[in-house]
Amino acid sequence: MDDINLGLALAGLLLLIGMQRMQARRQAFAWFATGLAVAILAPLTLGGGENQLMLLAALGLGVALALILGLTASMADLAARLALLHGLTGAATALIASLALIERLLEPGLPLGLACLAILLGAFSAAGATVTHARLANLLPQVWRHISQAGAGILLLTATLGLGVILALGLREGPAWLLLFLSLAAASGLTFTLPLAEREAPLAASLFGSLSGLALALLGAALDLPPLVATGILSAGLTLLLSLHLSRSVRLPLRRLLWGAPPARDEDVFHPVHPMEAEDVVERLRAAREVLLIP
Image (cartoon, rainbow, N blue to C red):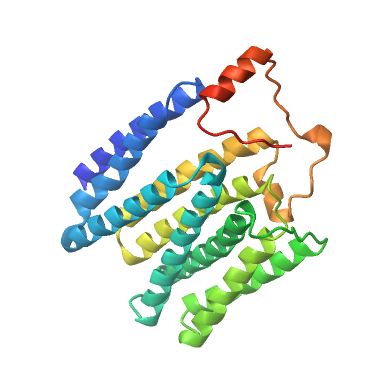
């Protein structure tokens, strides 16, 4: 475990350097990428145990999928692709935790409670990220906003938490109860996400990445798998930093997303102005590989 802690400390140092360079408006992607790679590979290679090859193979497949989706997407589609990846992560985490419950791999109490919370967050983020992806990909042209949206979402989430406590204590078990739990968690995610428009959708996609990362960390704690805990915490931390940065950019606090994010008034939206001469505009357009026009 000393080697794992040393590797994670090195990863944290690289990520901090990346944050400092980003705040100074300098190139930071290489530092972030190196730090994240070290943070993932250190616990997998040093603490993977008997499942080391399987974990590395799963990591390779995930990286390959991310590269394919990233390289084949334009900048206009990137946010939608990221939302899709976050949704897949949440869904996979919820399904793995559900399998652990069905196979009765966990004892009632704290381990089972962590697994149930991982299911809740995974299904919630999977449903919400799916709606966000559909919104960003123009597959969902209409936004549904209603004054009762926040209240209905809180009621659904409260019912989901109550059922999760019942499952964690071992008072109810079986596929039917588990399916009801998954359905309530997914319905909560849908209820909170449907009112989001294009302005809030990229921020919501990043926030769901934090939730899916947290679900992964909770699942790792329930199954006593340190690599999952480390990877989940780092994923949740990085996407949370991105969410905070985006929320400041659009002047929309994260807490407002849970209340339907009412349409912002025009004076609340920050419109950066970059004065340029006509010749400069022509040169910029000629040099650009892609141009996105937003009326």
